[in-house]
Image (cartoon, rainbow over all chains, first blue to last red; front, top):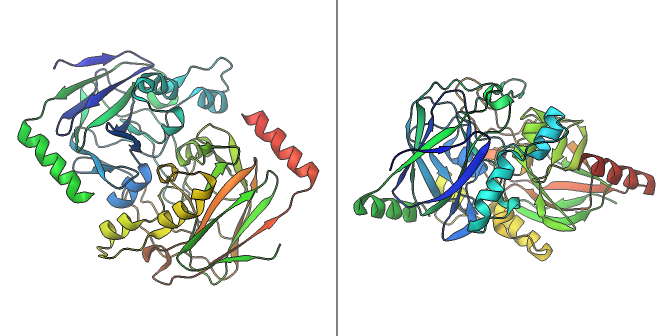
Length: 212
Length: 212
């Protein structure tokens, strides 16, 4: 399929079948895309930052890393990554983020509000939208003090990260709405999906069952 | 109230009213206690690591830090901390943790299984038990590479951390079941609750509403 554009400060949701590859592209550079995932057959199973960080033993996830669910099953595998710097510590920005962190008086609904709206047709409740895999987001952590910062992404135009689905998924994806995470330049995000062959699809499902 | 002992590799759940202070004590040293919290009046509102790390701008939470919910409201404030080294990145250990990380063939249900059992009477579903505030857990992060390790706690006998509730809560609390997190010495955890005066309780509720 050709790339789909997510306009600035908006979000979308779609199905991604086991074996398919989702490619998230930063078309202009220095933009963030929040990604969350749910088992399409049971949306109680969701992407889990805590399970993933524990099993992968790192907060810097890149090619080869697997992203795990709250039920300790593999949901996605990173199969390509042109940049290697993403965040999996933080939640999507929200109306409250802008009020608390930016003192905005008429705050934007943020990635959280956009994800709530996009995922509602799939039966995902707002309370189920937790920590996201924030593609291209630059959140350095000081190992000594623990302090973290939200800095502009280092991604250039065309940088991308690709995830292969290990099970049938519902994906939520945004073009981020927060000033700090993209240096104040709200930009679009592109994505495209590469179809899987029947053999690839079957292999992913078998691999997922073996981990389950 | 006198301290209550949580036996090794077990967990419990209880109510903590707004204004009350929960003191979690490591009675022998080098043990971890996983803590999770839910709004007692609506268990869809839960402790959120991502919201907390974002608003507090650190992964090392200690005295003065507030722990936030998935709805961006303050649930707990750390009011005393004799050690200053805890984890808020990881999920409670589980049957799957022991199978995946330790290759155990007859795995223990872990803190996750213990929390599921303890919280079931309060209507908390297993899928709602996510990243925990892991008292005394020693998880250094390398700021350069992102690699994390699970090392034995540095807590000595009697070290403690105290949390004041900002709303009426249901708390889940464990004496951790994972070898790596306590250096292979499974030990108990003690806790006690200090009652709040009517004025303290009212002040916490008003402060919570102001943040909401």
